[in-house]
Length: 261
Image (cartoon, rainbow, N blue to C red):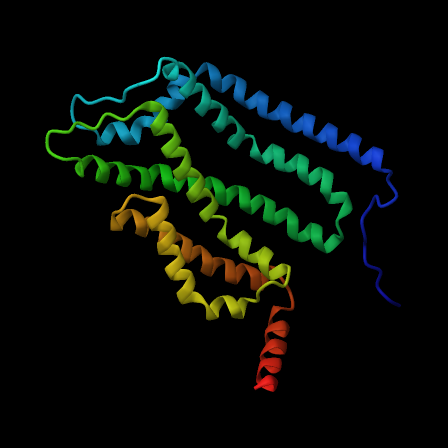
Protein backbone atom coordinates (compact mmCIF):
# COMPACT_ATOMS: atom_id res chain seq x y z
CA UNK A 1 0.00 0.00 0.00
CA UNK A 2 1.46 3.32 -1.02
CA UNK A 3 1.65 6.08 1.55
CA UNK A 4 -0.33 9.19 0.67
CA UNK A 5 1.42 12.50 1.02
CA UNK A 6 -0.62 15.03 2.91
CA UNK A 7 -1.06 18.12 0.80
CA UNK A 8 -2.41 21.61 1.35
CA UNK A 9 -5.62 21.67 3.32
CA UNK A 10 -7.53 24.31 1.37
CA UNK A 11 -6.57 24.02 -2.28
CA UNK A 12 -10.22 24.44 -3.25
CA UNK A 13 -10.67 27.65 -1.33
CA UNK A 14 -11.66 30.53 -3.65
CA UNK A 15 -9.38 33.49 -4.20
CA UNK A 16 -11.78 35.91 -2.53
CA UNK A 17 -11.73 33.79 0.63
CA UNK A 18 -7.92 33.92 0.67
CA UNK A 19 -8.00 37.71 0.29
CA UNK A 20 -10.52 38.06 3.11
CA UNK A 21 -8.44 35.86 5.39
CA UNK A 22 -5.29 37.83 4.46
CA UNK A 23 -7.03 41.08 5.36
CA UNK A 24 -8.17 39.60 8.67
CA UNK A 25 -4.66 38.37 9.48
CA UNK A 26 -3.14 41.76 8.63
CA UNK A 27 -5.70 43.54 10.82
CA UNK A 28 -4.98 41.19 13.71
CA UNK A 29 -1.24 41.75 13.28
CA UNK A 30 -1.68 45.53 13.16
CA UNK A 31 -3.90 45.56 16.23
CA UNK A 32 -1.39 43.43 18.10
CA UNK A 33 1.44 45.82 17.21
CA UNK A 34 -0.61 48.83 18.32
CA UNK A 35 -1.53 47.14 21.59
CA UNK A 36 2.18 46.76 22.36
CA UNK A 37 3.24 50.20 21.11
CA UNK A 38 0.61 52.36 22.82
CA UNK A 39 1.65 51.60 26.43
CA UNK A 40 5.31 52.06 25.51
CA UNK A 41 4.65 55.59 24.24
CA UNK A 42 3.67 56.71 27.75
CA UNK A 43 7.03 55.52 29.11
CA UNK A 44 9.04 56.48 26.02
CA UNK A 45 11.43 58.71 27.98
CA UNK A 46 12.28 55.96 30.46
CA UNK A 47 12.78 53.45 27.65
CA UNK A 48 15.07 55.82 25.79
CA UNK A 49 17.04 56.36 29.01
CA UNK A 50 17.74 52.61 29.08
CA UNK A 51 18.81 52.74 25.45
CA UNK A 52 21.14 55.67 26.15
CA UNK A 53 22.73 54.04 29.21
CA UNK A 54 25.67 52.40 27.36
CA UNK A 55 26.58 55.77 25.85
CA UNK A 56 26.12 57.78 29.03
CA UNK A 57 28.38 55.43 30.98
CA UNK A 58 31.16 56.03 28.46
CA UNK A 59 30.95 59.84 28.42
CA UNK A 60 33.31 62.01 30.38
CA UNK A 61 32.13 63.33 33.77
CA UNK A 62 29.72 66.22 33.23
CA UNK A 63 29.07 65.37 29.57
CA UNK A 64 25.53 64.60 28.44
CA UNK A 65 23.64 63.82 25.28
CA UNK A 66 22.20 66.78 23.38
CA UNK A 67 19.31 67.57 21.05
CA UNK A 68 20.17 69.72 18.03
CA UNK A 69 16.66 69.75 16.56
CA UNK A 70 13.66 71.49 18.09
CA UNK A 71 11.30 68.51 18.14
CA UNK A 72 13.81 65.71 18.63
CA UNK A 73 13.47 65.58 22.47
CA UNK A 74 9.81 64.68 21.91
CA UNK A 75 9.83 62.59 18.75
CA UNK A 76 13.04 60.58 19.24
CA UNK A 77 11.87 58.65 22.34
CA UNK A 78 8.49 58.02 20.68
CA UNK A 79 10.22 56.76 17.55
CA UNK A 80 12.24 54.30 19.60
CA UNK A 81 9.13 53.21 21.51
CA UNK A 82 7.39 52.48 18.21
CA UNK A 83 10.33 50.46 16.89
CA UNK A 84 10.65 48.57 20.16
CA UNK A 85 6.92 47.84 20.17
CA UNK A 86 7.09 46.40 16.67
CA UNK A 87 10.07 44.22 17.60
CA UNK A 88 8.34 42.95 20.74
CA UNK A 89 5.17 42.21 18.77
CA UNK A 90 7.08 40.28 16.10
CA UNK A 91 6.11 36.84 17.46
CA UNK A 92 2.44 37.81 17.16
CA UNK A 93 2.98 39.10 13.62
CA UNK A 94 4.79 35.90 12.64
CA UNK A 95 2.01 33.85 14.20
CA UNK A 96 -0.52 35.62 11.97
CA UNK A 97 1.67 34.99 8.93
CA UNK A 98 1.99 31.36 9.92
CA UNK A 99 -1.77 31.04 10.36
CA UNK A 100 -2.27 32.29 6.81
CA UNK A 101 0.37 30.22 4.99
CA UNK A 102 0.29 27.00 7.04
CA UNK A 103 -2.89 25.53 5.45
CA UNK A 104 -1.27 25.82 2.01
CA UNK A 105 1.87 23.90 3.00
CA UNK A 106 2.58 20.21 2.89
CA UNK A 107 3.02 18.36 6.17
CA UNK A 108 6.80 18.09 5.84
CA UNK A 109 7.00 21.80 4.99
CA UNK A 110 4.99 22.74 8.07
CA UNK A 111 7.37 20.68 10.21
CA UNK A 112 10.30 22.71 8.88
CA UNK A 113 8.82 26.22 8.68
CA UNK A 114 7.39 26.35 12.21
CA UNK A 115 10.71 25.77 14.05
CA UNK A 116 12.50 28.07 11.61
CA UNK A 117 10.11 30.92 12.37
CA UNK A 118 10.47 30.39 16.11
CA UNK A 119 14.25 30.08 15.99
CA UNK A 120 14.63 33.10 13.69
CA UNK A 121 12.73 35.26 16.17
CA UNK A 122 14.79 34.00 19.10
CA UNK A 123 18.05 34.50 17.20
CA UNK A 124 17.09 38.04 16.20
CA UNK A 125 16.35 38.92 19.83
CA UNK A 126 19.63 37.30 20.86
CA UNK A 127 21.52 39.43 18.35
CA UNK A 128 19.96 42.60 19.72
CA UNK A 129 20.72 41.61 23.31
CA UNK A 130 24.31 40.76 22.37
CA UNK A 131 24.70 44.16 20.72
CA UNK A 132 23.20 46.08 23.64
CA UNK A 133 25.03 44.40 26.51
CA UNK A 134 28.40 43.70 24.90
CA UNK A 135 28.95 45.54 21.63
CA UNK A 136 27.61 49.02 22.37
CA UNK A 137 29.61 49.56 25.59
CA UNK A 138 32.77 48.49 23.74
CA UNK A 139 32.03 50.69 20.73
CA UNK A 140 31.25 53.79 22.79
CA UNK A 141 34.25 53.30 25.03
CA UNK A 142 36.44 53.24 21.92
CA UNK A 143 34.84 56.28 20.25
CA UNK A 144 34.96 58.43 23.39
CA UNK A 145 38.60 57.56 24.10
CA UNK A 146 39.49 58.15 20.45
CA UNK A 147 38.35 61.79 20.62
CA UNK A 148 41.22 64.32 20.33
CA UNK A 149 42.35 66.13 23.44
CA UNK A 150 40.11 69.05 24.28
CA UNK A 151 37.09 67.55 22.44
CA UNK A 152 34.10 66.59 24.59
CA UNK A 153 31.86 63.94 23.05
CA UNK A 154 28.20 64.96 23.37
CA UNK A 155 26.10 62.91 20.98
CA UNK A 156 22.80 64.09 19.48
CA UNK A 157 19.93 61.87 20.67
CA UNK A 158 18.46 61.46 17.18
CA UNK A 159 21.78 60.51 15.59
CA UNK A 160 22.44 58.17 18.51
CA UNK A 161 19.13 56.38 17.93
CA UNK A 162 19.86 55.93 14.22
CA UNK A 163 23.31 54.52 14.99
CA UNK A 164 22.05 52.10 17.65
CA UNK A 165 19.21 50.87 15.44
CA UNK A 166 21.72 50.20 12.67
CA UNK A 167 23.83 48.14 15.07
CA UNK A 168 20.76 46.26 16.30
CA UNK A 169 19.65 45.40 12.77
CA UNK A 170 23.17 44.35 11.77
CA UNK A 171 23.60 41.98 14.71
CA UNK A 172 20.00 40.78 14.58
CA UNK A 173 20.39 39.79 10.93
CA UNK A 174 23.88 38.35 11.52
CA UNK A 175 22.43 36.04 14.16
CA UNK A 176 19.99 34.73 11.54
CA UNK A 177 22.86 32.90 9.81
CA UNK A 178 21.79 29.38 10.89
CA UNK A 179 18.26 29.91 9.59
CA UNK A 180 19.56 31.24 6.28
CA UNK A 181 21.85 28.22 5.86
CA UNK A 182 19.06 25.76 6.58
CA UNK A 183 16.89 27.45 3.94
CA UNK A 184 19.72 27.42 1.40
CA UNK A 185 20.31 23.72 1.96
CA UNK A 186 16.57 22.97 1.89
CA UNK A 187 16.15 24.67 -1.50
CA UNK A 188 19.12 22.73 -2.88
CA UNK A 189 21.19 25.84 -3.54
CA UNK A 190 24.11 24.47 -1.52
CA UNK A 191 24.95 21.36 0.47
CA UNK A 192 26.55 21.12 3.93
CA UNK A 193 29.74 19.77 2.33
CA UNK A 194 29.96 22.80 0.03
CA UNK A 195 29.55 25.04 3.04
CA UNK A 196 32.32 23.29 4.96
CA UNK A 197 34.60 23.45 1.92
CA UNK A 198 34.26 27.25 1.86
CA UNK A 199 34.90 27.99 5.52
CA UNK A 200 37.87 30.24 4.81
CA UNK A 201 35.80 32.51 2.56
CA UNK A 202 33.08 32.77 5.19
CA UNK A 203 35.66 33.69 7.82
CA UNK A 204 37.00 36.49 5.61
CA UNK A 205 33.46 37.65 4.86
CA UNK A 206 32.65 37.75 8.57
CA UNK A 207 35.57 40.11 9.19
CA UNK A 208 34.48 42.25 6.23
CA UNK A 209 31.04 42.57 7.81
CA UNK A 210 32.68 43.48 11.09
CA UNK A 211 34.69 46.21 9.37
CA UNK A 212 31.56 47.63 7.70
CA UNK A 213 29.11 47.65 10.61
CA UNK A 214 31.42 48.43 13.53
CA UNK A 215 33.92 51.21 14.31
CA UNK A 216 37.47 50.68 13.07
CA UNK A 217 38.82 48.92 16.15
CA UNK A 218 39.82 45.28 16.32
CA UNK A 219 37.70 44.41 19.36
CA UNK A 220 34.42 45.58 17.83
CA UNK A 221 35.15 43.78 14.57
CA UNK A 222 35.92 40.58 16.45
CA UNK A 223 32.66 40.89 18.40
CA UNK A 224 30.74 40.67 15.14
CA UNK A 225 33.00 38.40 13.09
CA UNK A 226 33.42 35.64 15.68
CA UNK A 227 29.68 35.16 16.43
CA UNK A 228 28.87 35.18 12.70
CA UNK A 229 31.43 32.45 12.01
CA UNK A 230 30.32 30.36 15.00
CA UNK A 231 26.70 30.67 13.89
CA UNK A 232 27.82 29.57 10.44
CA UNK A 233 29.12 26.36 11.97
CA UNK A 234 25.89 25.96 13.93
CA UNK A 235 23.92 26.45 10.71
CA UNK A 236 25.82 23.63 9.00
CA UNK A 237 24.99 21.24 11.85
CA UNK A 238 21.35 22.38 11.88
CA UNK A 239 21.06 21.89 8.12
CA UNK A 240 22.35 18.33 8.36
CA UNK A 241 19.82 17.56 11.09
CA UNK A 242 16.76 19.36 9.70
CA UNK A 243 17.20 18.62 5.99
CA UNK A 244 17.25 14.86 5.32
CA UNK A 245 19.16 13.38 2.42
CA UNK A 246 22.05 15.85 2.40
CA UNK A 247 24.64 13.08 2.67
CA UNK A 248 23.19 11.35 -0.38
CA UNK A 249 23.23 14.60 -2.36
CA UNK A 250 26.86 15.24 -1.39
CA UNK A 251 27.82 11.71 -2.43
CA UNK A 252 26.03 12.04 -5.75
CA UNK A 253 27.68 15.37 -6.56
CA UNK A 254 31.08 14.02 -5.57
CA UNK A 255 30.56 11.02 -7.88
CA UNK A 256 29.56 13.30 -10.74
CA UNK A 257 32.61 15.46 -10.12
CA UNK A 258 34.96 12.48 -10.19
CA UNK A 259 33.27 11.13 -13.32
CA UNK A 260 33.76 14.47 -15.04
CA UNK A 261 37.43 14.46 -14.23
